[in-house]
Length: 382
Image 1 (cartoon, rainbow, N blue to C red):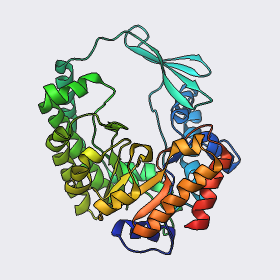
Image 2: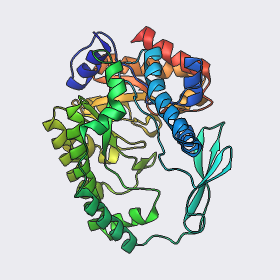
Image 3: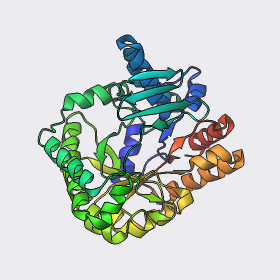
Image 4: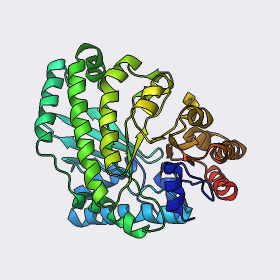
């Protein structure tokens, strides 16, 4: 079987000749070691690179775009993955001021501004300073929702926009590897206290913003179907290792109906609805993996108790991506990595419909010995 056929078999719950494999994402440092050159992939480092490129002018930004398109393709080829990651993080906001080699200021220096700083060791690009801000209120959220509803009236994603993003990978891996799309997220900004408060105090606002996001997702799915993207990555973090940030009752009331709308739209196009969140999702599992019509669960958090075997037994119609943890790759021994990788492969062979790989980012400073132990085990034992 070809790699793309193994992936399709996993989603259609058919047997395959080998366990399909993927990686959710690689830090630039690990990817650079794989390719033998600086690799334009990763998280915060890509945001810093794009900010630097935008600051340096159109030619520098064009070079950033070209390298950011080609390096994920070369990486997937080098690792011989069945399901690939075609794009990494972006940050298209041009800085207002360059502070130093690793720091930029964004926004209005005399008004609302923030300084972001890059840490080469961790590859994180985070807010280091910002102008003072008052806490947001329910009135602020209501204005945000109204703006989103007005913007939805003119939201008409085109197939051409997805060709620009995914076209190079689709062409490079045509009739070879599976390329997923995206743009069907459904979540709130859990780092914004006002939105978490709104779940209890103003659920009507949460319902309205979820209605906007669900309609955006439905339209995005249609545009992606036109260019041949069948696997649509969505979801959004809403849980920790202690469980969801809001109650199962609120999930049932607010999130479930909008997930069902997204699933219905995706399925009309012959596509698959993929949902991601870290954390312990068992309290809402019956809604999320059953009633919602979600086809696939990824970012499966092993340390939070999300177990491949238990998931497949309870939800036989669910495809799974994972479940090797970034933590074990980063902090465990070589034997730990081999043991966890082997366990995931054994579950995939026993239950099927499992695509094995690291559930989340292979982080900066992950020992290459551990990374290669995972990759060698995947290829030798699949």
